[in-house]
Image (cartoon, rainbow, N blue to C red; front, side):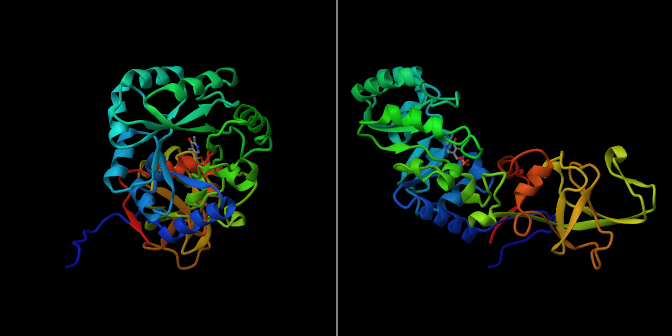
Length: 361
Ligand SMILES: *Cc1c(COP(=O)(O)O)cnc(C)c1O
């Protein structure tokens, strides 16, 4: 029985599961002695949370943001550790954590108090978070020991993993000061440790510890501005493709798109592509942002609209209505689009709109 297919707009996000598995292998290669907590928050960085979890069922754990996501993973049959990266937000969530055996980050005093008051039927595993310098979530160094002792005596807690998160693992500043802070507090404590995001997994083996927390590298994008994904042996997982649905022949002096921000200096051929900012393509991508037409490199022209964008076909022989366009992915790293639009690949991948059909390849 064939699936009923309806004609649709040609925009498509192709998710390459073999690339995802390959990138997971790269994580394993870098951190062979650590367990892997694959980070699938934000709908698996836009790739589909359950899709990524199923493709990476060899993972030792999954990290998400919300209890709902964690419950969905358990209900889909995953038995591994499931970590709530910000922990619980209110005591109401604690019975669900217990029922579904979810692991919570503990980053503030209020969470410890809620745990002590909860009277849970089972004990929870927790990741106690040290604020080693990022100053976002976590206990300050001077408060960490007391938080640890309180958790150790709390009846609701069974296993405590020590964790921190780096602010500059992808930058020249690096991790030295934060790592020194963590080591100073963790020395002599007999507890598992978790520190490394993708950048630290790739550059700082001394941070690997018991659990690594890879995110962006799984999706085939480089966490570094100064190193391409290919140079790190990472393969793009999401390829955003569309086609040309209209062609305009511009005369010199004519403009294209809202605000008439691009004006042709010579007679030009412009392709109209079915992809716009309502699909997650960044509106801030300026004229000159790369795109592939028939596999050849070209550039976008003028402003990105809600449902369309314009692309330079001048000198591209054979390009016209129906020609395939790659917005990012295979052959065109998403980092390049992000850099052109003044952002990072994470934001573009996460922002893929729900209206874009996804196919697994
Ligand atoms: C998102 C996140 C990660 C993954 O970071 P990447 O840079 O995508 O590898 C790791 N740890 C924590 C606490 C996070 O919030």
